[in-house]
Length: 459
Image (cartoon, rainbow, N blue to C red; front, top):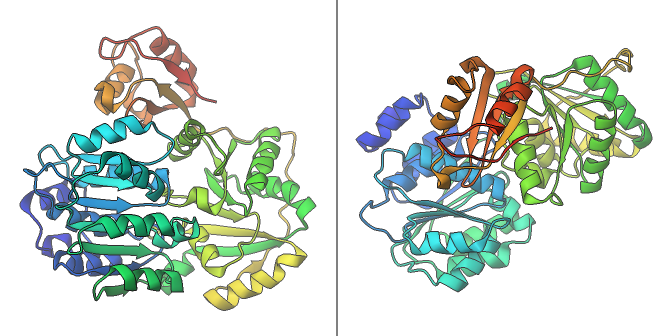
């Protein structure tokens, strides 16, 4: 089904055309129509299914541009997912005059968030804990709120946000529309829906056989003490452009990242113990191709959407089959083939059996890869990241950075500049590694838009 068949405003259809959106994904085809008709919705689909667009389009259609009060609220489990959702809403709503989208989450000063709310935010994308704190201080007018979205509701409950979520929802107008999106449908989600939704339409999108077939699944047998060496051997042999390596514990991600770095691999840990700036840097570098291997826990990687990811490795098997499905679903997307490899110890074999029975997948036992000369340094990432100490609130735009890099002062070709990621007060820019040091020196001593900004070349 095409987006053009929907009853959307002319501006929205124009934006969709500009962005190259034509055919809807299954969750979009079912959820958008239900939400546009005003119904509450429970949407169950895996990460990467297009659910953000599915709830963002109906949400934007209901925004009154003349009304500067809060009209829509999206709750997410993590700051990273909040940032991604807000970015997508802004992108889809870019033809709506003066659309105000505010991110409210931890890891950032509360003052600007309170100011943004008082200045007339029409849409808030927030984590539950920080939003409760902000609401208690600002006491916003909620009478005009029409839409509530709970994105990755199952993960918010797992992270202990249930009390905060209920506190927030009890303060909202009873006449609102509530959309609940979840990768799973446990009893806790059913209970939440019964409390806060009115006759919701339930939409469940199951993985089809074609998507399963596009992911090659195999495993190696290795005891815990053998896994670091085996992993390095697998990475040297396959030499993928990038991969996410999942661990069950935060300490394991830290130890494994250190081990891979010692062996010369471009690797970094992503877990809940990282300071916010470190998390931002790791995620930016992985998204823009400056970091090849991300070693992550499931919670930390939730909401991370990487296109064309060739490989997922389960360094440790997850406790639940559904988590396994979510992990490997990050590869083999949009008709691309992908590979999922698991390293399994003797005591993990029972979990392997449970996964195969529950998912209907067949994991093949792989022969150990041939040894590769360990003295050969692994390939570095093709790109390297520049940190620029100026962002959206400093009136720095992607075009300004691209102009500084490719103009007379920078001298780069457009092909040597990669992803540009603008935040409120800083930006990350991917540069071809071969010219990164050279351009860093030029920018460090130069100006952007006639102004001097801090510039760092990240490792």
